[in-house]
Length: 325
Image (cartoon, rainbow, N blue to C red; front, side, top):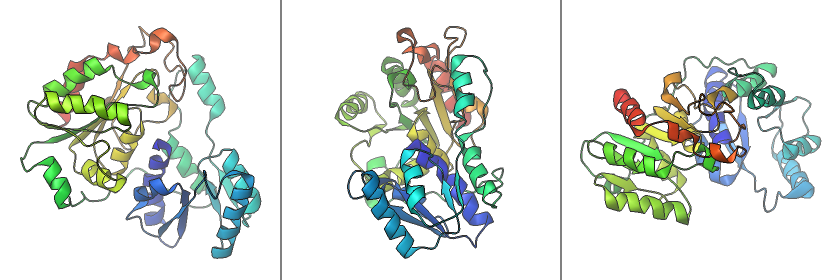
């Protein structure tokens, strides 16, 4: 999800800086709301687990694309087996894939070259540069805050407190801030601000319901809204607190300030949210955990690194958020 969200600021820049270009985005139907409001952008939903599954499914997808479109170029922003197979079937001579910098990333995670790598956003932009569409990412524009419908207004309430979103979960435990410390963060912030909790799945929802029931000014919206509605709420936040995860990138693509917590991963790999100051990324202590980043996606780490982010104090997180607000 984060990878898809990271394409949005790039496609926004492409549509604005090259307004004569018509863009077709192939993505899962669930992600279609990410691209709402982008000029000259059409979403083509790809159902990779159903009718577009496997080689024959990709062939059917290509036939439909070839019938309905005449592509000048294909920008492969995923560079995986599926997109490489699709390349064989689509009628188009200009096909450029993103360079994921796998060799550089291996050096980074092995500890041989601890340095900032090119950001994923710039890697996406380089694809369009190669296709003849240079992009300037230094002056991005973002959508206006969404108008909240009556249901969302009712959920958030009418008080004038500043709104802080908190998304405490990630795909892997090594990327998550320990929940006992996150509870302290929520408790402190909820005294002066409205805290809105984001998550998904039965277990996460149950945990977040517990936080909502324990503290005032805390609202758990996980499992209650569509992605469109969640994005509307995110666009109305004053700050989003997230792990190195998809929610950080969704908030960033909407122009919201994002504070991120990093455990066994590190911004040097290029996955920091778009257009956020470096000091908004709160990092685990590398003196204690010198092997960070242990992997790019946070799925590999020594067992005793699992709670590396515990080295970031709740006070550090709260102070950063308060200073931004």
